[in-house]
Image 1 (tube, helix red, strand yellow):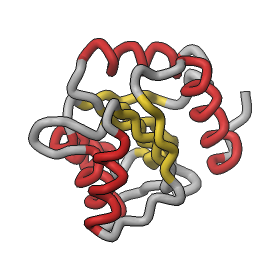
Image 2 (spheres, rainbow, N blue to C red; image 1 turned 180 degrees about the vertical axis):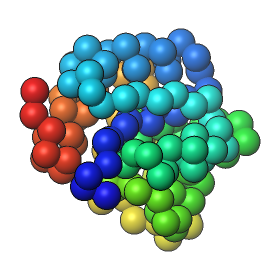
Image 3 (cartoon, rainbow, N blue to C red; image 1 turned 90 degrees about the vertical axis):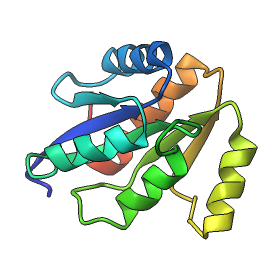
Length: 141
């Protein structure tokens, strides 16, 4: 997995937030790390399967509340799969309490998840993305 190029997955059903998140992080990271977008957890899993043999998933930035498959179920499925995944997650939501309860109810560990309340502080998001990439993926800018 270390030899595979890495990518970031941005998942949000709100296109404006998804595009803004992509724009913000693309300006603060090395352009060789591709950013992939998905509109919900189901679409995200399809994209992960498509990229799995070509690239390693370095970071998931996901909304909690989405149609078809929410962020908690997405993370649960990614963790239980055999994909090339480096284990870093940022969850953004206006209802973080609900998200945290669902993780707890499902018995899903959250110590490696950064929770960010919406509306998102852009500087804080950029710092978190950089921190994950620098500390865990050998990324330096």
